Image (cartoon, rainbow, N blue to C red; front, top):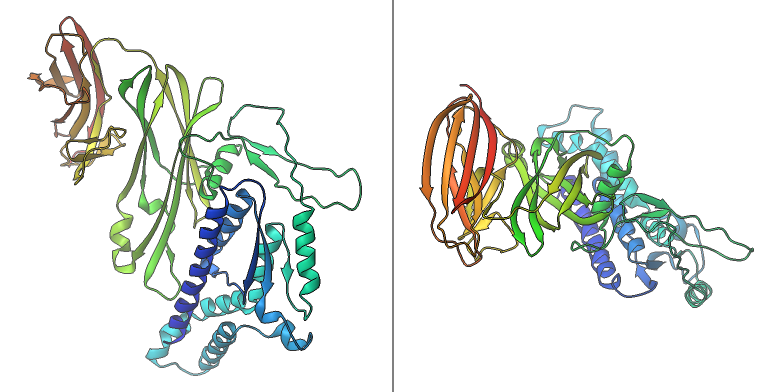
Length: 489
């Protein structure tokens, strides 16, 4: 297959093994108390461009209270411990090191064109060979970082296995009630001191005080966002937009959509070893806090993409948008958000406010600029305010449009159920403060949910625009306004 083919094969095999471990961890994590795994393996490899993935796997195990005890099958020496047992590298590593050495020797003389690409990847080959050279080290790291140990380099497995059982049988869990009961998202340090000798304690450095909201337990991918929000000053390594949109009232609560928008060019693209593809990995997190600073809801999204080299330039000029709805009772809220570029080890944070007050009478959502409408091919999700009648709205969070852009505005009208009067719309479009369009629109009957979704075309001339929309039902009304700009050609 050639050197890069060997690299790609080795990396893909390692990723499959790590992914299998993650699947096991996810299955065991929901079970109560500490879980113990005896992992019998010929060794593990950590791909050099996937060390974050490896670290997150260990964090996932610690979060789920899963401890690994590893047995290196290649290093159990039935004939006794010798130099071979201790030092022989894996076949993969030996082969790759041999290839790297051959390429290095070829550099003494002009290389044919067929070898030029192989020689360009010499550093990658050496790095992979070094990390795969001692696959016992990865087994040892997995075991020790999760509270276990490695069994290897011995012809007597009985004694270490007995030690494993002793640790399992003498394992006690200690729980305590934190002095602070506020789920504010900050990091709480844990320190355990032993009152006497002869004991071993296994504990985390601490935890983030985050309640189990509808998103479930905190994931390893969310940890980067929590760390960014807990830093002072908070990081700002790149720009992104954050906004909230008010929608329907639901039995004492109001539905708000939290929206992220960021150019994909802000995300680090890493070439995949042995392949022509690039990897991108981004995690989004938003914490909704009440007036007392307590987290009442959490929104998160982990996005991992693999993009071909031919498509990378086109993808990087696109915009990444994500929206998620939350339901909030009346009150004042702060939305703290973070986006983490996982492969670039960078993060940025943002904040916005929600002042949720009761609005009697006919209601109307906030106005949103539409980037595009997508066909759903299924029934709309009632919990997603951007879905209606087989369509999904992909919004523009930005309010600055390019020259020649045609603005479409999306909003939803919620007529008052007990009001017999028919609702109508009154719209005004202003350009640089001057009214250019004014009209009345008769609304159709609401759908089964009591909603009337609308999409209107705005003024596309260059300049600063304001849109004022009023819904009138009898002697009651509700009004929304929206500002956007279109650049001159």
